Each structure stands twice: as structure tokens, then as C-alpha cells.
Image 1 (cartoon, rainbow, N blue to C red):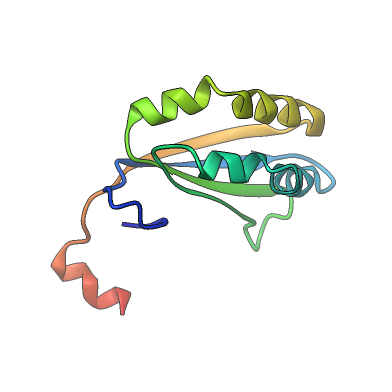
Image 2 (cartoon, rainbow, N blue to C red):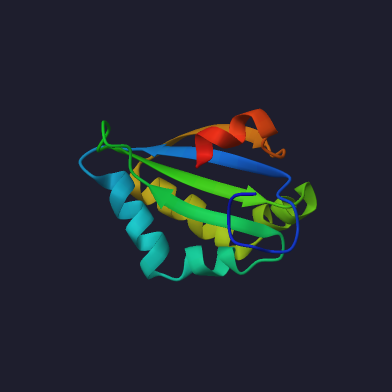
Amino acid sequence: PLGRDTGERIMFTVNLYYTGKNGAARRFAEEMESSGTASAIRGKPGNARYEYFQPLDDEETVLLIDSWTDQAALDAHHASPEMQTIMRLREKYGLTVKAERFTSESVPERDKEFLK
């Protein structure tokens, strides 16, 4: 599975696309990192991946890949102080968010040759 090795299988991944204006999404992600909020989320039970990326063709969007081992872990995150910080920073930077959710499964043998 993707993400750090937790000894558990990732149940699902949420891709969150944060979009703003004039570099706001990038500044949001930078503040999430510099404030320690992202690090605190990475340390939560059940979090397997929490990483920001920026699409090469869209400087106003930042992608967060957020993976959890189960729904209970994500629910606990949603009730945490860190989630309140995320909401405050989203408002501060005037961001919109689009989400996609994927369930993990093992890579089929026939696809492994493309991952070499």
C-alpha cells in the first residue's frame, strides 16, 4: 500500500484539492506544515499518509493525499483540534475544496509490470 508502513492495510485515501487565488493554496499548505498541524495529523492513530503536492499545470491548487486505515480514525480526526485549525486556515486563505475518495486494494499481478 501507499503511505508510510504502519503494519496495517490502508482502507481508503481521500484526495483533497484546495484551490485559491494568488498563491493562497500554497501558503495554506506551507502554514499547515510550519505550524506543526500536518505533523500532528500524521502522528494520529490510523493516519497512513498526509502529503501535499502541487499540480504542474495549476499553480492555484494544492493536492492533499490523505490516507486512513479505517473510518473511525478519520472520524476522530474530524473531531480533533487540528480539524478546527484546517477550517480556520481554509477560511483565512479563501480556499474552495474538492474531494475524491478511493478504497485501497492490492495491485493485480497483471498491473505490476507497469510499476517497475
